[in-house]
Length: 337
View 1 (cartoon, rainbow, N blue to C red):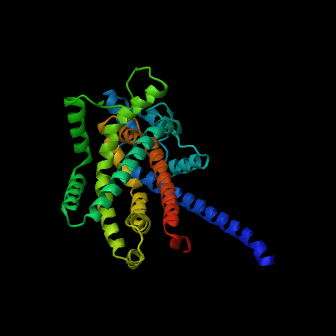
View 2: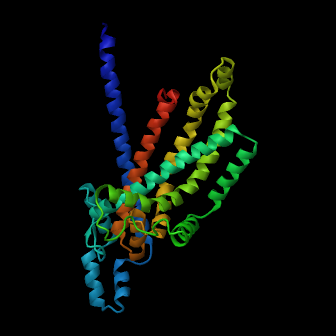
View 3: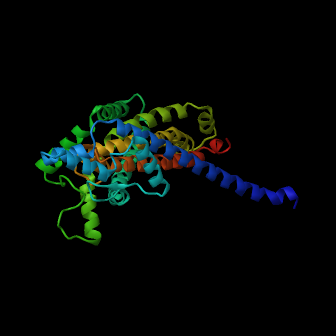
């Protein structure tokens, strides 16, 4: 064995380590930039938590308002507040919510699983249905099935999320009484184990369908266009000439390459899915980060808003990394770049 062969594995591992270190530095830079922008943007918005509390009290003396500002640290200059905020972030501390009476990290930790469950189920539902309908429409391009699927996708794309949610509640909860109206689980049911899991899934059906329908329309149209484009490529015609079976041709040569723009779009839209979750969680009273962000915005609980925005940005960056990894597995040419 030559010296070059012996040092090749060490060079490979060192390149992997350097790549991950570079990604971690990118994550730190992105998080810091997002934290700075969010901090100053929220401070530019009119009103604060003290004014909301004073308005809820009906009448508050100037001394009481001054005491609240001192307690919340709002009486200090903006640059001092910003320096303290960065100091808390350096110690992985998201601050304290005076409205909720608990730390922001604990508050987000109690709501994050509900949002991840809703987002995960909606993304999975949208991906499976969107890829299936898109491939079906592309296979029957120009025929009745293609026209029907494209029309349904256009209707889903043009319909607002809140209207879809309310109509689903009216039909399946009010008229048919098949599904629960709101919440994540039945209140005071005392269910545990498998019965509790079934109850949560029962409550999850309407919110996940509402959030998924809009993205089903996008993915259906994207997969349809991508599959039609891939089927026109020279390597597909070559595979047909070689006598590759139609099922294997579609699965290996067409669908796999057509999924690359779909995966990229899916990773890019995670941020918008989080934004859509705010509407859906509000309509269905789903106890997730979206509902928490809406309540914090109304109450001007800026520490909670900053924590949610920061966690959302980290989640988006991690999803984009996962998207890049999947694309490299789907297309070996990307891994060589």
